[in-house]
Length: 253
Image 1 (cartoon, rainbow, N blue to C red):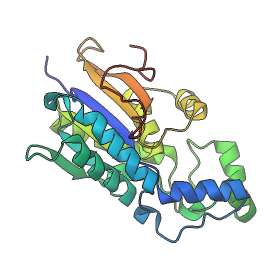
Image 2 (image 1 turned 120 degrees about the horizontal axis):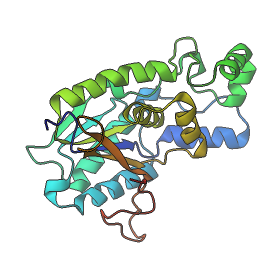
Image 3 (image 1 turned 90 degrees about the vertical axis):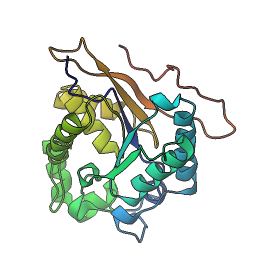
Image 4 (image 1 turned 135 degrees about the horizontal axis):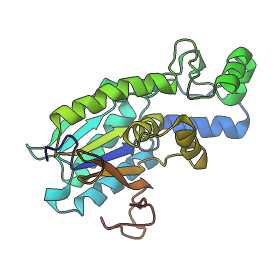
């Protein structure tokens, strides 16, 4: 059987960013605007985000070299690139045969006029958009100048075509953003709108949370990717050590 998919595909949300910290502070204070000066694409990792990325790199480093990622793909946003670089360094993935590709199709969902606004800020400044979002739902709502989840899914269909064409049998690690991780699950598992939004409601994807798929020759006529791990996080230095063995975050097979 000719493989159309990677042998292993890891999809990782970037580490905690300065924007995540600022958004939490704005929400806690009941503010409408997130206090951060950088463009969204320029927001760096926070100190904790660097630690999280290093810890995940160490988790990969604990694997035999033959089982670690061979190709890395990252969103061009600074926090994703920094996460990928930290994983490469700590994970022993800097050999000449390791590839690190920046792909703009993995960028964060674009929020348009709603960028940097909290829910309170959206309701105050753009009440009509808050109502449109309530009526349409986040899957279909596209703010002016921004994207819906469907728009993100459209560009990710192209990305998966590229992975299928050029990385069959490979071990691929993707570093991106929460909505990208969820939209990739939607595509790879042929989920419905209701199913993916239910997963979204259950919990946020943790910073440096790992979603893992492995090729299963018995899945479909030509084989396919099966989810084996979702929202797994490697412990920070000083916490209980984690190996590459299955854990509580491993999905039902």
